[in-house]
Figure 1 (cartoon, rainbow, N blue to C red):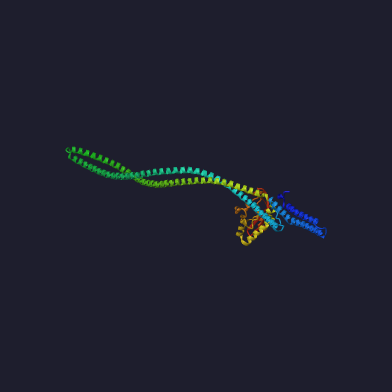
Figure 2 (figure 1 turned 45 degrees about the vertical axis):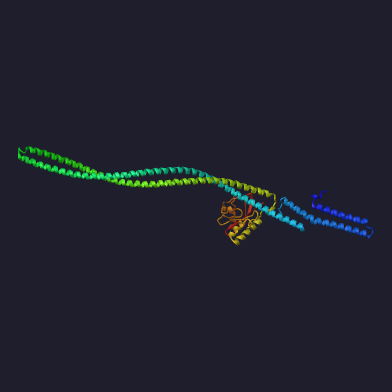
Length: 496
């Protein structure tokens, strides 16, 4: 027999067997060597008593040592197989009792660790699922934004080109207006000269009229003198006949001069009238030219301002274009980061599932999950905290992962009189969501029913379905509801 690999029971029984055999051999030897008298009977009785005592000692050792060891081995084997579903009581004495108590403590600690790991992986998987959904939505929005920015960048390039062209056109128009303003000023000066010339012509025309009047007077006087000379020649008779001819010619010439002077006067008068009319037109043209010059100067100023504004606008548009291009680049980077983040979240979710599968070898039994009694107890504890310490303390305790309102897969959530979620034990991102919009996989508005029961009955139970965040299995749940003031709190557990 190879005792090196034998169990403690075999080795103990083998050792006690050797001891008992040695006692029996010594008793037999004593009987054979002893004299056949009373001492032989004494030796036989003593040997028998020692054998009985040895057998009793062997039985006691086997009962007090082997049995507790076997129980400890069975416990360790259950733990090795992952069965920590039920607590066990330590039985034994001394070191064996300490061994069993240590195994019991190890089993409970393993239970707590595995339960926390499973609850933690569930929470991580749930959060990762929400983050993955958010990343998907963010990725879609980022792609839309990138597309919009690309279109915006293209439009900005066209706008930049258009604004630059407008700036160039405004600059050229400004130059043309400046040239037109110079020409208008010159035209104003020419009109001023024309006005002055027309004034001189008007003065000269008046002088000519005066001169014609003098000539007309002279012709009239000459005509009178010729008439007088004719009269005198007639009186002189034959001697004055030659003088009468001269007087007649002078009179004819005077009449013709008077007639010509009258015509000239008429023409000059008409010319003066036209000159005066022309002067008025020239005056109006001068005033209009001054207004034109003023307007052209104003247009020049406006075009200068437009040219300056267009230059500034062109510069600003170019800066905006650069900024849009930078935003477009950053959006592309954000899209890449979102894609990487999505991969990381998916990997995190997969790792949570793998971790949950890794600890699935441990059988926690019914103690792994909360039940109706524990859910109701947790709600009653939350109601007591809310009534005693107020809302903020209640909210803080609900969100405390090591607090007294989170136990394995049991946690609290609550809504206020706005029907919005105001606190959630494992998913703070749900805070602020309208409870009326939340539905289970069958389309049931279970939070609406919870609020109705809490506000009308004070407390009660609500059945609904929930997608398990790790297994993705649709599972039935039941929640206990209780209302305190305007706060309706719930705690749900999986029905199994």
